[in-house]
Length: 239
Image (cartoon, rainbow, N blue to C red; front, side):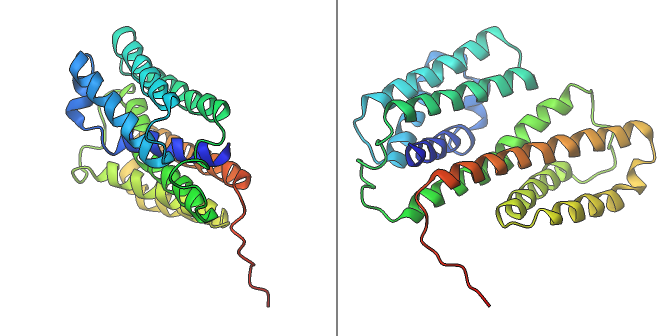
């Protein structure tokens, strides 16, 4: 089941955060756009599981766009509906993997070495920690009003957040959680002069905590799922 879930997770993040363009997000209320997104969800799931004709993947695509439609029609584009939308998608992946645990093992990747599933999982986690985290944190900060950091580089906050989530993800997967403390200290020092104003300081603190929390949560989830995958068979070097 873990291999199937890792493959489905990669398909999900590719469909939602790599191949879904901005105009698709903004125009998702239209039936044509929803159909196109459903097609992307289906094709990415087929590609990552190696199953070109599984009925469950068609069910997955239909449920995915149904969740999106409910969000678009009934809820605002705030952080809580966004997170609830993602949780619903992830729950769907778990249910599909539970219903067909051998979906990955019996598809085009049958007999593939263990590192293939691990690579899919780590890649999916990296995209989810960085790209998905950027959208979630951005929606959270929008709720606090206009960005008070007026004197900053264009998209500077975007790139800082992306890099810090990527670093946290890599540090945790690399078994170096202490590096996160160094990252917090470095960002605090670099932002000190820019956050003398109370509102700016609160803005930076909230955004940083949200960004760090998202990356840590994703990394821990990936580490847990990785432990369920077949072992890589790599013997660690000993002195």
